[in-house]
Structures are given as structure tokens and as C-alpha cells.
Length: 383
Image (cartoon, rainbow, N blue to C red; front, side, top):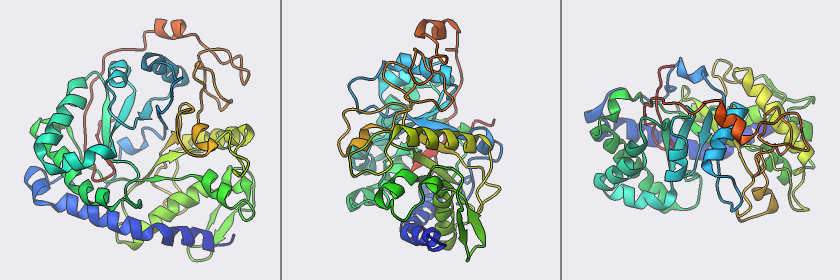
């Protein structure tokens, strides 16, 4: 593998990140933003204090017909002590179920709404009122993800409407008074999947390197840095590309990462054993709250994909098998979480839905909303 892997990946995404960085500049310096606030600056994290309060979150995808009700999901998350999730829309049933739970949520503005949101502030105002303001402060909506997997994609129409859509969403938040409790930040979100890299080239990638297991690692001669896992190499490739584009202080957060527990015959590495190993080691690594070789003082944060398998999702078998939990609330495999019902993977780690509800975990809480350019609009909680 050698040092070429790191900089090959860095070069691969550099062009995309460069245009994203320009997008940040445009958003942060647009007349609209300057008229509303001067707190936005390219290259700042959400806040120094907030950046280290959490490192582990989970994506709650719902393309399935066998998942538990959102109210049961709240109980499951509380039992597992997972306090940060990301959803891909603003489903009202989910937002209502999470009211008072204290769980912090990033909601999504789906791609199909971007064109509409870009046409005028009134459209964005209506969306924010119906999907954000209506659920505050009880539901802790921590941010809004404007679009999903747009930059780097092939749908150029979405590239063109992303900026005006994000501007209009921010303007709506401002006019509703939410800007008074907002701190603008500019993290860059990436999907980092060592599984996909290994699946596509198992002959040349050491699976131990992809799974956080003992291995010789990779020494990069240009940076004189050593990497013992692919996850950190992916994160640092993004940092290197951003630095090359002139934005060396922007924080990188992993919006998706994970390992499939099942796949098609040609999907190398998609096994329960590997999924357990990767997710368990990743959780341990994130719990250390440390940086990467390239950015040792920038704590790594990530949202793991995914909470459940999604049996209605199209594509190869692996796409439907990233879940940490089964639909009945039991763990899919043991990575240290507590399930809600007995599981063959760990029968001793269980609580019932009734027992969880009796703990009184659902309690009122307050929420602040924030905006970050492009991919995610984040709040500062001042924690």
C-alpha cells in the first residue's frame, strides 16, 4: 500500500473539497449573511467547549418496514446511552417521539426539497416553521443537514441550488429569532467507509488495517506520519485536501461510517465477525476523545451507520445490513451496547421496554438551533 494511498485519496477528494471550501466562503461572506450576523467564519469549529462533549453518534435510517416505533427507539437509545443521532428527514412522528428525551438530533432537509427551498425565503420559512420551530424546545433539534451526498455527486442541478437553499434556511431561522441562540460553525462532513475500500480492493488492503486490529500500518513519507488504521487515514485525507484548498482550520466530522454484517458473494469482508470487530474497535477509539496523526488536537467525532438494518433499501445486500440492533430491540452483535430484549449475541445485556420507560428518562429539555454552511446546520449548546 505504501504512502501513496493517503495522498491518492487526498487528491481524489481535493477537487470536491476545494469547491466546498469556496461554497463556505460564499455562504459566510454573502450580503445576506453579513446583514444578519458577523459570527460566521470559515475554519472554526462549533465551539471549543462543545467540540469535545461528544464523539459518538448513530444514523437512524428508516428505509424499512419492520422497525420498531420511534417511541421504542427512544427507549433503546437511552438503554444504550446513545445521545446523538442523525435522521435523513424531519419526520414528525420521530420528532414528537423524541420530545423530552434529551437526545440531540440532526434532522435532514432531503434533496427533493432543495430546488423548492432555493426559489424563495418564504418556502424555507414554511419548512422551518413546520419542521423545526413546531418541535422546540422539547425536541432537541441540534442541526439541519441541508441535502445528502450532493457534493461529489453527479447531479449538478443539486450543486447549483444547494447554496441558495442553505441561505434561505438560515434567513428563515434568523427571522424567526433563532439566530439569537446560534453560533455559526463550519465543520466539513465526510462519509468514511473502510469497509467499502476493502470490499473494492481486498487483494491490496490489509483487513486488519481496515478493522482497527494489529497491523504494520502505513508510513507516509511526505508527512512523516504513521497510520495504524484506515479510518484515521480517511479523516486526515480530508484534512489534507482542505489544507491544500486553503482551509486548514475547518473541523472534519464523519457523518457516516460502519461495516456491513452481510453481503453478496462479491462483497468481501461483509460478515458479522468483521462488523462486530470494526464497530467495537471504532467505539473504543472514539471514546478516547483524541485527534488524528495529521490533526492531533482536533478530536474525532463520528456518526455510525446505522441503528437498524434497512430491509427496504435498494442496492447490494450490504446496503441492508449495517444495523447495530435488530428490529425487536436486541443487539445484532455485541459491541458493548445494552439491548431491550434477550439476544443470542449477549443475553445478559437486556432491559424490557417497560423497565426502560419506568426509569423516567423522558424529561423536558431546552434546545438551541444553529446553522453551518452547506452540509450541516449546527447549534451551539454552550456545554
